[in-house]
Amino acid sequence: MVFSGLSPLVIEDVADEGERIVVRARTPQDTADCPVCGASSGRVHSYHWRTVADVPIDSRRVVVRVRVRRLVCPTRGCRHTFREQVPGVLDRYQRRTTRLTRQAKAVVKESAGRAGARLLAIPASGVSRHTALRTLLRIPPPAGRTPRVIGVDDFAPRRRHRYATVTIDAETHERIDVLPDRTADTLEEWLREHPGIEAVCRDGSATYAEAIRRALPRATQVGDRWHLWHNLREAVLSEVKAHNTCWTTVLDAPIHDGPRAQTTLER
Image (cartoon, rainbow, N blue to C red):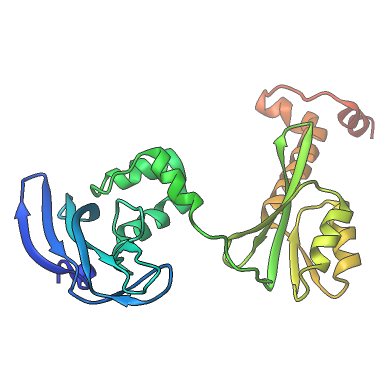
């Protein structure tokens, strides 16, 4: 049960070395297909040992040493030698088992390089930040999909010089795409390429509102919560400052002077 993820292998020995657990295994004596011509072969050319890391047990590292066969292709004219692979357990050129790589991908997808390396070190699955980034780059991008409700907002890759637009799935909170600018034409073009959107959550930008009206006339436009609270806060603060002369004499607080406060005082 502990090594159920290694079930395609034949486990021969398990050694407890204190800080780590070493598992010795071999591949089953089955035939394998030649990667060049596809012919099945069971003829052994040689053996070699492959050492990979596996998911930790009781916060201790697990190392798996697997004896892998090099086989000879039986096809005349090919005679190609190749190493057998174990799908679902060992990936080509990797130093970790498939299930450990899967766990590492889940961590680095959420926290990227340095933070992912620190988190993976806690359960003794430590990798370097460079390995974490390489693992992240191997994750294939998600398949194209059109969500029902999206969120649109701008951000600044370089403040006061360059702005972009990010679109997210408002229901799953996953990023969908990043547009190179925050113009109405760019957003309108993107929306036309993604029909089926029923609602768009946005800020108070008239640029985004116009793009949504042109591309999705039937879609519902919703003001996002943060901007609603932010605008309410600014309105309340402005109103309080305008009437500060009414209550500053009682609270002995500093008076906010300005055109609106002067106008209110004259009224």
